[in-house]
Image (cartoon, rainbow, N blue to C red; front, side, top):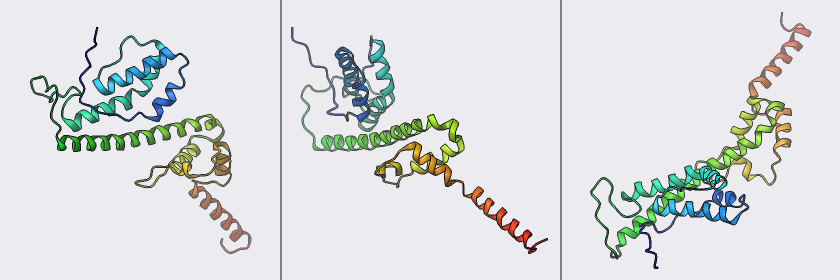
Length: 211
């Protein structure tokens, strides 16, 4: 029995590094296959996964936001669903072998470029979240204010930059950096200035320069 190929207008999608990382956390090949099939069917057919086993479903849910954002971005840019039906109009079957249109190809390239930009943004957001999570074990030791200042400083990036400040360092040991940050009172210039002013006032009073 020959299986009929499922119709889809989408030609490609970007397989994110986060998908790969999650895939490698799965031990069973059956779970890996289910996870990959769910991503592919959603990206090309906009079909939500059904009957996934617990671990495969958990992995898919962790990536659902980026997967659905990619699909919605393609639909929004093309103004059709993934099967080629124009949105908000009665459905008619698209031609079996539609002629190649240079403008359509250009539109597909533009969509892919937009997807790449969106995925870069999502990757940065994911890396920021990972960096933030790496600070959680030190909350009790250094406090939320210090961690927040540390996080805002080291996740800074240029307007069109692909890397955050901490990613541009040759080495970055979070605990050692935090100890140095706390010791040198980085990110807390107001308190540092206040201490210098207090010291100056003490000296002035000591030597009778002020009443």
